[in-house]
Amino acid sequence: MNDKQAQQRTGPEDRRTVERLVAAWLAETEEHDRAAAHEARTGWERGALSERAAQDLATWVTARITDTGFTEDEGPYVDGPVRITPSDKDTVHDWLRAQGHPV
Image (cartoon, rainbow, N blue to C red; front, side, top):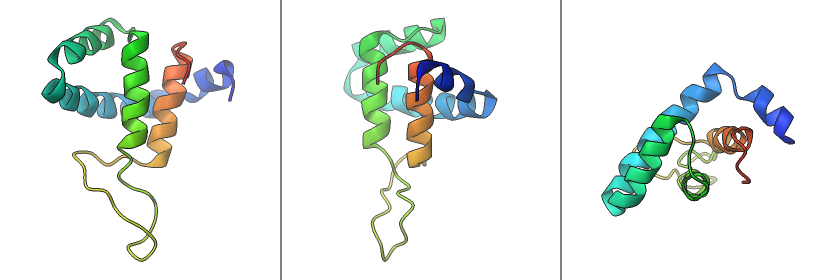
């Protein structure tokens, strides 16, 4: 997907997904690295994540997929504070690309 396609895909529903997951990411980051969380929160509130924060978010959402789409017989459901599907991960990655971040 190129940058123009990513920008076209980031509508209001995608924005809600990003906001939901950024809130969870910031809360988790706050528990482990207050300085990084502060930097990321400041960037988020200004509407411009730093490159470091953007990469951390991209990695976090990939690592935290909780709903794999598999049934109990096919694979695990990962317990987490928020439900994150592979589609949610793609939405966050697309949003980051639309903001000019390489993912």
